Image (cartoon, rainbow over all chains, first blue to last red; front, side, top):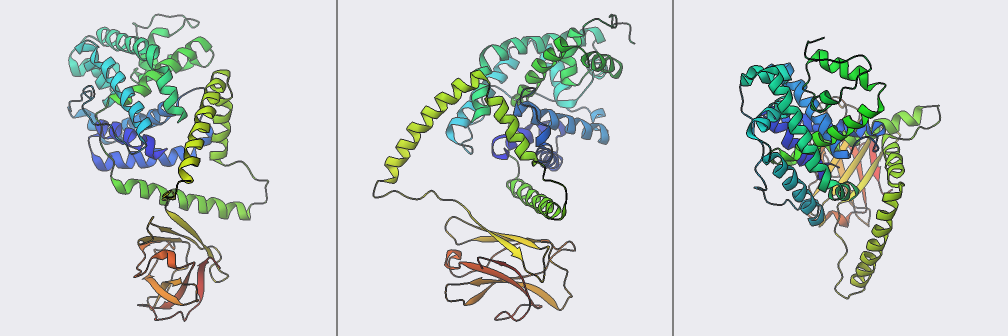
Length: 173
Length: 257
């Protein structure tokens, strides 16, 4: 499990908290928790990736809130489409599927309007609420809500339409 | 309730679910959605779909490599947890419960028993069959090499340290090894533990002299001039600080015996 998802979990934790030691601690906690709570995992409710990354995001948000570092302005950005080489640690087939999955997600994010991408990044990587995003970007609250919702709806359509098969393959292997 | 939430108690909260999945709703709205979700299967389905989207967004974070030592830390920690669970289960009177991983596998089994997965499983079986055929052909070639893998030996506590346990992990070529012990009794400053590498003739060679932490735990590299594969058994004894040329004290852990 760690070989497959360790890098993913560490990457998102690092991008959220901006500190390697804290990101390592979060990654350690998540895989320990996954081992302890494996019995509570419900495959019919969430993919393994969703389960793990959901826990990682929540843990990172808790850390950000606990340390009060969300008050500090730190820019967050999305990865560019396929700038990294394919990692073969977990075998070439899985690595290729993971790379394809990343490419699809990053392409879908890249297609969003700039304003939606910006609001989504603050919500996703900094754990900002609607109100905090509105305050941070000096936008009306209703505008923030509309842009977040619109971004998620577009991503749902794009990601669900053509990734299910590849995603399931990855989960299965 | 904020003025911009316009809904009756029975109204769906579809518009708020994408933000709920991102965990970015303000507290009052999040509470309304959570309450509605308790009884609305349609909105629950919507939430699952958006949680899936949120999960996939992880892949849009810039890649970063975790520290190499993190995996070893995790494995060591999990091993300690397993040992604790094993000790607890030995002393428990109640009937055994399936472990977390067994439950996890049960859920996976249930998931993969769905019709769509059965088709996928059939394809997988065919692929595995072809794969096995290829492997079989390769195995019968004169230059076929065995698949390299780490070798792991369990160490069991003797009557002198019944709660202790340990692991020896050897590299593929047998030139490097790591010893992990836990629950060894604390020793006085005048004493240390010593690992003995035991060859086929019963000769003992020192592999390391070490102390343990307050909770009886230690991880260390094994020192050996010869390949560790030359030693079919291992033992750990209590020796004077600094070690002895040959075992003199009580044996606390052993393997291959």
